Image 1 (cartoon, rainbow, N blue to C red):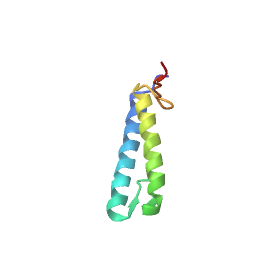
Image 2: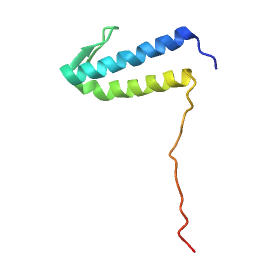
Image 3: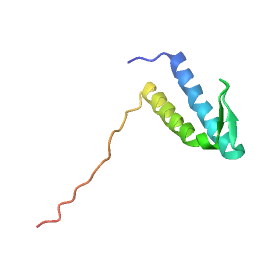
Length: 79
């Protein structure tokens, strides 16, 4: 799926907004987003969840490979 450079720029701006919100809440207990929503320390979990999703969307749009699940290593100890 091809993503336009404008869409990638929008996704990057969203990631940066979440980063700013997280830092502001950690410093000042609250932050007002550009869209008018006011976030408080109680919303830190929501901020981090949104940031994680925005970062994943941005990475996917930039062509990063996605890793799912957990890598497991098996060592056979029998002789």
